[in-house]
Image (cartoon, rainbow, N blue to C red):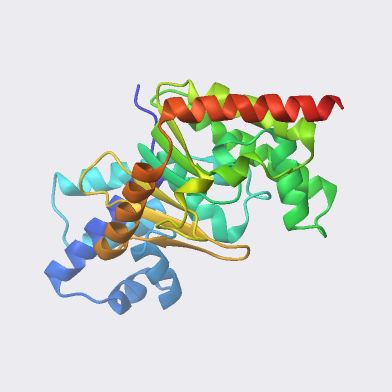
Length: 289
């Protein structure tokens, strides 16, 4: 059974509603009048940042004179888009600006990730995640840190569940040597990376020190791919306080070229595995001293 992808369904509904509006010569303000709401809500609906409730969608589709079989398809997609996901289940733990990405991450069929300072969230151990979250937000209460760690661990299930995405991750060699959480935490983290690298859907590469300057200096990013060719790929970038989902073709092209250049300059998966094992042994030895 195919796993539900509610965020993709919401994007499809928004895309088709916009297409129907264009065909009918209607404006966002017309939808605001039909729904008796303010314009910000309409822009969220059309941007797939919020979902239609069932009655709202029926009113809009009736107004736009949607016909079968599209009418039934959109109603079905909208129903599927309302399935509870990780963001809803961990609503108190998911920062507002990261919620769209978390939802898309669970729906993607391909993830191409570059990290220049940290182990990617889908690969972190609990102790590593706790150390990172605590350091980046030292004022955060212990209970909130715990909620965010639990959310991060829940996100990871996507890599080992049914129909896992193809996950290709590249990270700088410095990630293996920064003492996040101390030697014991790093030793355990490196062992987890080794285990994850053995999964059939995971490809892991280290971008070594001696590769020098690279195509994404100081700029970690993720390219998300989706199963239907009509569901445009996205690029996710973030910093400490904000994040962005980019979907313009020229933006996607820029990051795709960067990822391909990083992949070409990085160590092979076999070489990466050897380096991971060496680093894990070094951290284990240090932790025993």
